[in-house]
Image (cartoon, rainbow, N blue to C red):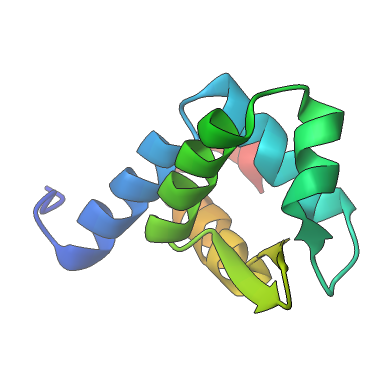
Length: 106
Protein backbone atom coordinates (compact mmCIF):
# COMPACT_ATOMS: atom_id res chain seq x y z
CA UNK A 1 0.00 0.00 0.00
CA UNK A 2 1.27 3.47 -0.91
CA UNK A 3 1.91 5.99 1.85
CA UNK A 4 -0.03 9.05 0.64
CA UNK A 5 1.49 11.29 3.30
CA UNK A 6 5.04 11.23 1.95
CA UNK A 7 6.60 14.52 1.05
CA UNK A 8 6.86 13.57 -2.65
CA UNK A 9 3.19 12.63 -2.86
CA UNK A 10 2.14 15.85 -1.12
CA UNK A 11 4.38 17.92 -3.40
CA UNK A 12 3.04 16.34 -6.59
CA UNK A 13 -0.54 16.64 -5.33
CA UNK A 14 0.04 20.35 -4.81
CA UNK A 15 1.44 20.67 -8.33
CA UNK A 16 -1.52 18.84 -9.83
CA UNK A 17 -3.92 21.00 -7.82
CA UNK A 18 -2.21 24.09 -9.26
CA UNK A 19 -2.83 22.73 -12.75
CA UNK A 20 -6.50 22.11 -11.94
CA UNK A 21 -7.58 25.51 -13.20
CA UNK A 22 -8.13 26.18 -16.94
CA UNK A 23 -6.34 29.55 -16.87
CA UNK A 24 -3.31 28.18 -15.04
CA UNK A 25 -3.10 25.25 -17.43
CA UNK A 26 -3.34 27.62 -20.42
CA UNK A 27 -0.65 29.85 -18.91
CA UNK A 28 1.67 26.90 -18.36
CA UNK A 29 1.13 25.66 -21.92
CA UNK A 30 1.92 29.15 -23.20
CA UNK A 31 5.17 29.17 -21.21
CA UNK A 32 6.14 25.68 -22.38
CA UNK A 33 5.68 26.85 -25.97
CA UNK A 34 7.53 30.13 -25.34
CA UNK A 35 11.22 31.01 -25.38
CA UNK A 36 13.53 29.47 -22.79
CA UNK A 37 14.42 32.98 -21.60
CA UNK A 38 10.81 33.49 -20.52
CA UNK A 39 7.70 35.32 -21.61
CA UNK A 40 6.85 38.79 -20.31
CA UNK A 41 3.65 39.07 -18.29
CA UNK A 42 2.26 41.67 -20.69
CA UNK A 43 2.54 39.26 -23.61
CA UNK A 44 0.87 36.53 -21.57
CA UNK A 45 -1.92 38.88 -20.54
CA UNK A 46 -2.60 39.86 -24.15
CA UNK A 47 -2.58 36.27 -25.40
CA UNK A 48 -4.73 34.93 -22.56
CA UNK A 49 -7.03 38.00 -22.57
CA UNK A 50 -7.34 38.29 -18.79
CA UNK A 51 -6.88 41.21 -16.36
CA UNK A 52 -3.39 41.64 -14.95
CA UNK A 53 -4.52 41.03 -11.37
CA UNK A 54 -6.19 37.74 -12.33
CA UNK A 55 -3.16 36.56 -14.28
CA UNK A 56 -0.82 37.60 -11.46
CA UNK A 57 -2.81 35.50 -8.96
CA UNK A 58 -2.61 32.42 -11.17
CA UNK A 59 1.08 32.88 -11.99
CA UNK A 60 1.82 33.15 -8.27
CA UNK A 61 -0.01 29.84 -7.71
CA UNK A 62 2.06 28.10 -10.40
CA UNK A 63 5.25 29.63 -8.98
CA UNK A 64 4.41 28.47 -5.44
CA UNK A 65 3.83 24.96 -6.81
CA UNK A 66 7.31 25.06 -8.34
CA UNK A 67 6.10 24.62 -11.92
CA UNK A 68 7.26 27.99 -13.25
CA UNK A 69 9.89 30.58 -12.35
CA UNK A 70 9.87 34.37 -12.50
CA UNK A 71 12.76 36.57 -13.58
CA UNK A 72 12.50 40.34 -13.10
CA UNK A 73 14.30 42.45 -15.67
CA UNK A 74 13.91 46.19 -15.30
CA UNK A 75 10.20 46.98 -15.29
CA UNK A 76 9.27 43.59 -16.74
CA UNK A 77 8.80 40.16 -15.22
CA UNK A 78 9.50 37.15 -17.39
CA UNK A 79 8.05 33.76 -16.58
CA UNK A 80 9.33 30.44 -17.84
CA UNK A 81 8.35 26.83 -17.34
CA UNK A 82 10.47 24.81 -14.92
CA UNK A 83 11.13 21.84 -17.19
CA UNK A 84 12.90 19.82 -14.49
CA UNK A 85 9.84 20.11 -12.21
CA UNK A 86 7.48 19.20 -15.05
CA UNK A 87 9.61 16.17 -15.94
CA UNK A 88 9.69 15.07 -12.30
CA UNK A 89 5.89 15.36 -12.10
CA UNK A 90 5.27 13.37 -15.27
CA UNK A 91 7.90 10.81 -14.29
CA UNK A 92 6.14 10.37 -10.96
CA UNK A 93 2.85 9.75 -12.77
CA UNK A 94 4.41 7.11 -15.06
CA UNK A 95 6.59 5.51 -12.38
CA UNK A 96 6.03 1.78 -12.14
CA UNK A 97 3.22 1.82 -14.72
CA UNK A 98 4.25 -1.61 -16.02
CA UNK A 99 4.52 -3.18 -12.58
CA UNK A 100 1.15 -4.95 -12.81
CA UNK A 101 1.67 -5.92 -16.43
CA UNK A 102 -0.26 -3.04 -17.97
CA UNK A 103 1.19 -3.22 -21.47
CA UNK A 104 -0.66 -0.13 -22.72
CA UNK A 105 1.60 2.24 -20.80
CA UNK A 106 4.93 0.61 -21.60
